[in-house]
Amino acid sequence: MKSAYFRFLSRARMASALPGAPVLDPVEERLLCRLATLWGNDYRPTVLETLGIDAGVSARTVQRRMEDLRTKGMIEYQFEPKDQRIKRVAPTKLAEQYFSHMDQLMHAASREKSA
Image (cartoon, rainbow, N blue to C red; front, side, top):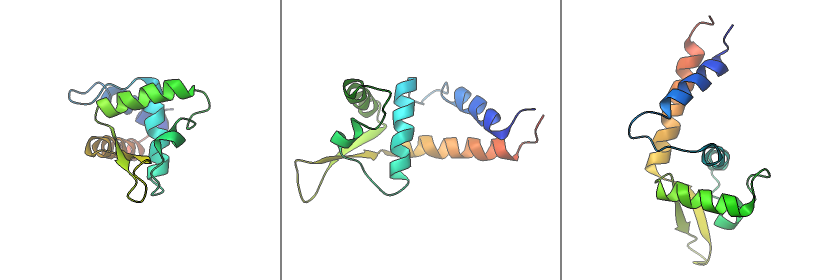
């Protein structure tokens, strides 16, 4: 019996290989998902806050992967209006499209009948 979650994971794996989609390594994917939980609560973490976002990954690795995500067009840094020394991490249009696509895959997987 395949649960909706397993069907979603299978579809998400296939979607990451689609042309035009940025190739994310597992650490980048995990960081992006952790950021999404914050963005979903209308919070934009500072760049400094993101260094501790994943206890299983060193701050230096997080920093490198954040730069990779920025280069791939998935995140952007926005200066805090009141204090230009503070940069916040925000999703780009590409990241919003990525999450919208994942949302569609999740809904499609949940509508399928279990095999």
